[in-house]
Length: 111
Image 1 (tube, one colour):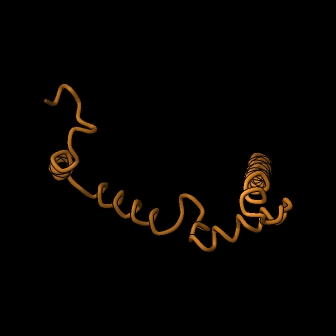
Image 2 (cartoon, helix red, strand yellow):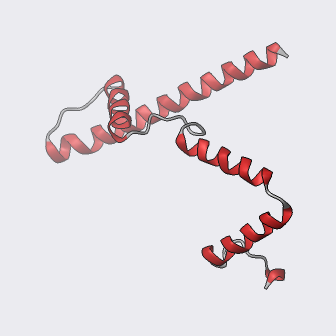
């Protein structure tokens, strides 16, 4: 069982590293293809492109890992509330949401 966990961790690390490499290469390629010709700015290396990526994440507040943070806490809280509801309360909530959210998610047999 521990070997499977280690293999998954290594697999995850490889996927993350490959993803960062691809995103860094895309940032570098786009920067070098557009900005030096348009504005006369210097070209950037791969490491500088990764630095730009980190800087933009810091400036725009997107360093959170998907699945964690305030949004996930809200979802967990809503799930716990849903689990504590009786079937009648759940149906009342469904009907109320259907009325508020329009036809999306409604089934044809419910019309």
